[in-house]
Image: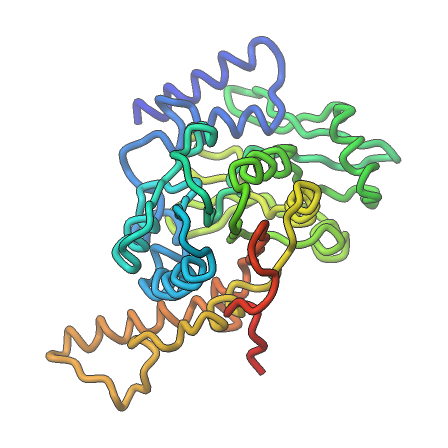
Length: 352
């Protein structure tokens, strides 16, 4: 494909001046304005694309968030409230929420949009769905007591891995958090996790920040026995791969995030952590099972065999958001608030 060859050429041209950190490679492969993975006209999200997200999987996700938005508005009082989706992509989530709960101002923000340009509002509910795991990250490994950073090099006309001493910023990252990697253990870290979250905190003088993403608190994320080779992965055609350098510009690259970075950043900015747990628990607490797709099967009627098959598929997709082996188990939800009640929210209900 001409586009693929052009991106390969762009990467190899950069390599003539020396190796690239994996973070730099990822920035080119995903976000090059003309040739990057996210720059094409084809959406990578959806059942017929490379991967699914909760909003694209089932409308019950927006149904549950709609209940959450209504509660937020009712507890915000008589002020100008705004619902913001950061990393909105093709707008699937923000448009479905607008249809679910008409009334408040909805704003979709893309990665390149300055948050400071948001329209004025007294209270904000900021939502991000798989925003942080798409931030360019470094691949690091501990060898012989020293921290090394993996790089991308050109070799035999293709791309390969190299290594160099890790920069002081990454050495400091682990030291300040008291994290010690085992010898030979890999880790994937983005310094953008905390800085981006700090930017979000600055535009929420009052309200809630709700983060849906793949990740763990740091004591779990960097546990060698569970994740000795890190969490970096590539996605294409609904399949996961560990070959991160294959087909640049034609596969998504991602890694699980350190939620402790976000929690601490928010609390340092004056936010209170109201919820941190699995997405399934969050959605169940909001009453997702009250949607018609969760009705008992004997109460469901279909007009035809084809409609019945489609309905069964939709019911299965809805359940993937909350069943133990589905997406609802893998994604974590962090809710932090400032200037709002700290208790009494639906999502804080005990289910059992």
